[in-house]
Length: 203
Image 1 (cartoon, rainbow, N blue to C red):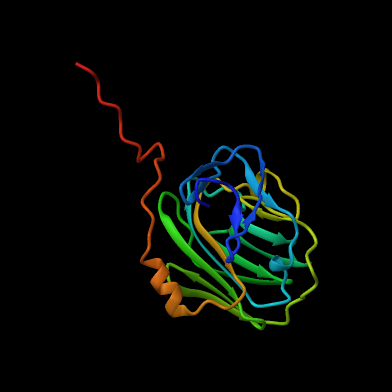
Image 2: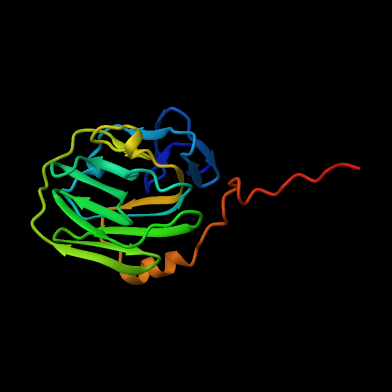
């Protein structure tokens, strides 16, 4: 994002987003606390016909029930998604769950999810926290890509209560060295009720 909910391809062309409910966009961050989410129409870029990686910074205001950060698929069917579940994270690709890490509220956490065509890997703050090699279903997901909710059926249990910053999708497996470099680019804390400066009384 760059002060707009729309996405952008590597060649600079704009991908118009549909805003469901309310989402606040500030610079390169999206605030999903008001209860909204973003959606994009199906595109070949979302499918598993090629390697796929995604990365983002996430700030959870509350854990939520089973918040979905980014989703272009449905569990144990087609496509993929990245989700907070239990006490950690789930990188689901083509019917395979790759679970690991430790979620937390009130802080920026960097997540990188990688599918190289055979193996799933999940990184938290630059460290490998889960890895799984199993046959993946590469059936094409023909639904939308959602950010802040679940493409398999959006609803309150899957709503993200927090912020995402610097979300990027790649058509190649990110290298561990790249991910560790990106972790050094930590954003400043958002102005949440706990971090927003108090007003100063007048004379």
